[in-house]
Amino acid sequence: AQRVTQPEKLLSVFKGAPVELKCNYSYSGSPELFWYVQYSRQRLQLLLRHISRESIKGFTADLNKGETSFHLKKPFAQEEDSAMYYCARSPPLSSGSARQLTFGSGTQLTVLP
Amino acid sequence: EPEVTQTPSHQVTQMGQEVILRCVPISNHLYFYWYRQILGQKVEFLVSFYNNEISEKSEIFDDQFSVERPDGSNFTLKIRSTKLEDSAMYFCASSGGYTGELFFGEGSRLTVL
Image (cartoon, rainbow over all chains, first blue to last red):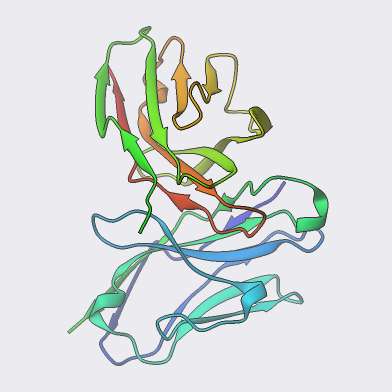
């Protein structure tokens, strides 16, 4: 079964501190990994995806196939980063499946002033 | 910026009643999805829809559920006979292609009494 594990339900850091939100996934071929974010009173939206290797709002995430992890990192957290963060996976493009995302349980990040 | 819209934002119904949740996906998108989130739990995949038919469905999506795109713009989720455990936030999403970026609506909260 495809699983995504986010071990921390809640994470608090001070403004300017580094932050790392952990995500591990069950091994199943070569899934595609994503981070979605939900700010207060807003809809779920894509933050970044591993195939793009991009940095969005200062966040990066590296896919570590050996550890089956896709942790989200930011060197200097800002108060506006406070939100619920969801790690998600989908089958690889070659599998022919539609974009059925499997979500982790989410981590509520609070950045303290 | 185009958005996925959902109605109603909140519906309260009696157990055993039929409920229809409506979604207007982004107009040039081709793939449509329903997800749900029971309070305090993960966002769970229900169904994906492409080319006027279901492409994937989860084990949650049993015979009580159905989806359709009646008029080329709306995408509806029908629950035939609601149960208490159907109480959840239901999210509609759409995507333009095989990119993995799903655009979510704000959700419809269903409360079954």
